Image 1 (cartoon, rainbow, N blue to C red):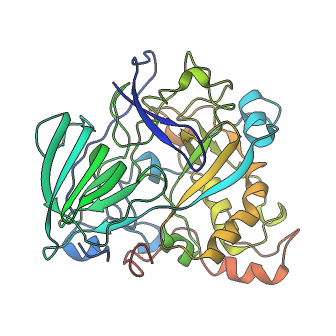
Image 2 (image 1 turned 135 degrees about the vertical axis):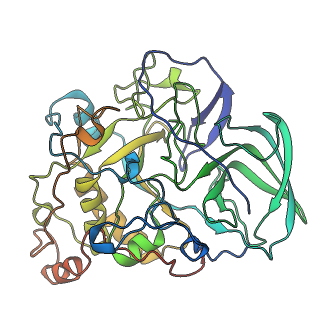
Length: 401
């Protein structure tokens, strides 16, 4: 079984073989992909719309990936229960000594294929085995041809990229992807998915994408459009330190379906798949948030929470992964507020396949900020101007700028 190991900042992945860990619940999804210009606009290619939040959002498109009932689009429920600050997983996440708070800047590029893009040859060492794979039959050492944007680049030492097919519905995600010739590419591991699926795998040991937890790389990604709109209308993908992850004997819980091949190095108590959120009674205007981007991230953690999808070495917690193209100022602003958010997060104890997000309805979003304690009072008007859930479904420009 394929496992993905994250060893060092910003997350070095090593594909290794390991045994399936039994005894954990799972929930499902599906996949597929193809590859042109870096302008991503699946909304213009005939995808059915499913609107929410006063018509501001669109499910099943790059701007709002996955189905409405996906974990990535499910708010924290009104019945959610939280650990106390002194309970072990929450205490570890908030305060563990020697673990730095970070964000995965320019981690993943999203590229949209078009009919004018060249057909390229792809080879791979191994691929996902989810049901909707369509690009050839070999599980190991396979190849296929697909339209691929010439501007495609692979980000971070993990060689990450997301290529959306011409139909705007299917996409490919890579681990250790690289350009190998004028019209050829190779990936050590590759997965196909659908934007209308749910972004998680359907059984223990399975992968829906390249995340160590078996989840799709698209899930929980902070897109540039999110930061431009100051509205992150989905759950967040997190990574924790290997010294926080564990135990190695039971290293994941639903919705995760697997864990790092290096699970033997886990020395903590937080399983992959754990859901952390800011309890709804916390007043976000009084926790020291200083920037509008930080407030957008805090609101996302309070409204949707963050799922532990990976590990990031022994001494780093990643509070999110940001799409290539975000400005340095946006990244700096997120960094300024990460610690204020981290120390307010708590484990949701009743997040299960039967009660996603804690169940029994949806928690009301936090009210717009009207004042800021520990930051600039002038900032509050900017934050309030971007209500939670109002995002432009049309991409704002070229990915990777």
